[in-house]
Image (cartoon, rainbow, N blue to C red):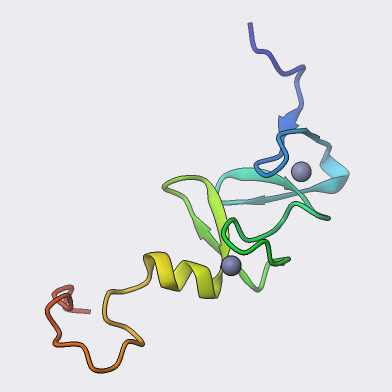
Length: 88
Ligand SMILES: [Zn+2]
Ligand SMILES: [Zn+2]
């Protein structure tokens, strides 16, 4: 039996999310207020600033996302280019 009673769970606080307080990103429901935050730095996000990572159904701010998952070598001056083999 499903252990949640028909409601969705917030990806941040794990409590039920109702439609009027729900925002969906990365395939996960979050509370619009308080829980739609970067996983790494807890910064508040909105539909313009969120960076979704569908691989783990998590959301990040652009800065944290770029730092963790961005193109290798992007924004890092002085690198030898050893990691830039994506060809983008
Ligand atoms: Zn929540
Ligand atoms: Zn962040």
